Image: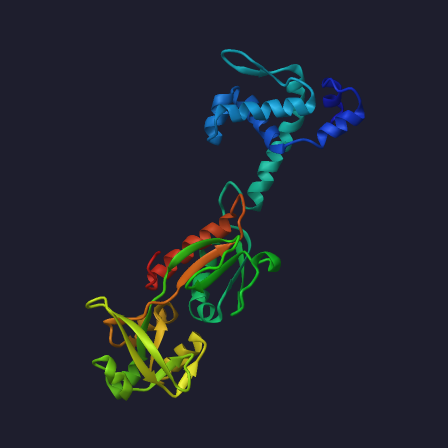
Amino acid sequence: MMTRTRAALPLRNKRAYDRRMTQFDLNDVAIFVRVVNRAGFAKVARELNVPTSTISRAIARLEATLGAQLLTRTTRSVVPTPEGQTFFREVAPAVATLHHAARGVDGADRKARGRLRVTTANDIGATFLGEVVATFSTRYPNVEIETLLTQRNVNLVEEGIDVALRVATKLPDSSLIARKIGDIEQELYASLEYVQARGVPAKLDDLSDHACVLFRPREGRTTWVFRDARNGREVTQEVRGRIGTDDYSFMRSALLAGAGIGLIPRIIVARDIEAGKLVRVLPQYASPGASLYFMHAASPVIPAKITLFRDFVLESFARAGVTHG
């Protein structure tokens, strides 16, 4: 394949030729093909959104690597030299093949495809992410989704994970790209059956007369911190309960079973609220929570499956009552 190119270019010997071939910058080759196809530098510069000088330098590097002049520039056009014509015939099909292969992997056509591996905490995954993934999979049938639900901080690169949904008050320094999905507020909920049987508290002090389901209590008690929507002030209330947990999906199950009143993120119980299974009590109070982040490894080109999933998650969590940050 390279015989004609080798004969056409003024290379001194095969060793020099092979050395120069290893110095190829494929981006420069692709730019050369564009310049020949467009018959000019300015058009290519506009297409790539770069200065014309960038295109000129790319061609100069390629000519220096090959040791031959590839283009003749006139005041009106750019035309390939005989050596440039020979080189173009050899490389243009290969460049087209590379572009086609890149689109097949997940490139310029922006169609989501391939395997997408997602990790998040157990409670987020077990209560909300399942529906998000199911709906996304229906919309993008060429994406195969795997989830890893765990409380540990997964190393995305080492474990081959594409995306992490993480809840945090402050993200640690990291090379990962993080997009804030929103701030997660916690609110007070109980089952319809519970409030029908025990009544609805009228003020925070009334919680002492109710069964409460607590998150990470100490000796059966905890202090709930609220923001009062009526005046924006912060208020606290100490509560006691016979049921405690460190997992919000367990708390959700306990609340649905009528165990009492719990302070829980709205996204965990969004569908239960819509179905009328859980009702909000003392709606003037909400507890500021952590933030939810969409995270992935840094890359010059982010696959469509990741960007489309990110946008879908943003929409889904907004519908569940998460405010955008």
